[in-house]
Length: 203
Image 1 (cartoon, rainbow, N blue to C red):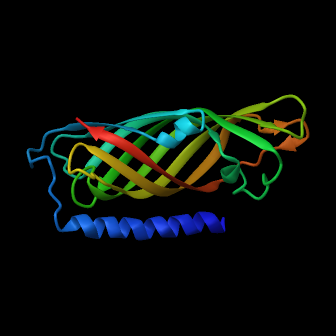
Image 2 (image 1 turned 30 degrees about the horizontal axis):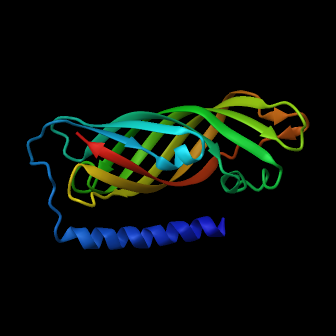
Image 3 (image 1 turned 180 degrees about the vertical axis):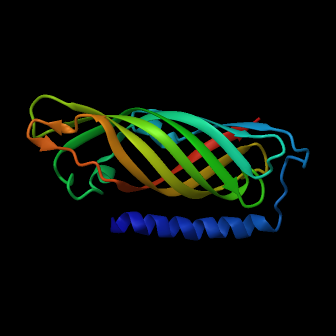
């Protein structure tokens, strides 16, 4: 947990530096024509974790600071993340989000998909868990997710391509299924921190 907070602290400092660096020569590539825009994003980390991540963001016409959208993803949760919950720590859990579907809304301080933003996600996640302490068997259950997050959309070349690091705090609860394997129970913590980044392109 201490290492997670340290990473969040470092990223906050980096974000502040990025915003100061680009504030003076901030030149949006899009004129104020009030037209709609479509962006595609992905989380590269999910592919390293044997999963995928595909997201669409839409800037509605006449909305200069709002993005709405949806997405889907899957991944194997790394042990460090599973161990953030002390009740699951060192219990030998292998946890996979088999599929997830979310809808999102993001509000930007200056211009949609440029600079600082806050966002909200509502989603549905399907889990499969196993543990090395039980020789056979697995459990599957479904969660509902509410996640509030904040980040920075950085266009390194002032063009359509961008990076979007963000951090958030989510609430989750089981809606159906079983989270026990034999005598072992996988604990579903209601609150959890999250840290990642997206890479995207606006058309």
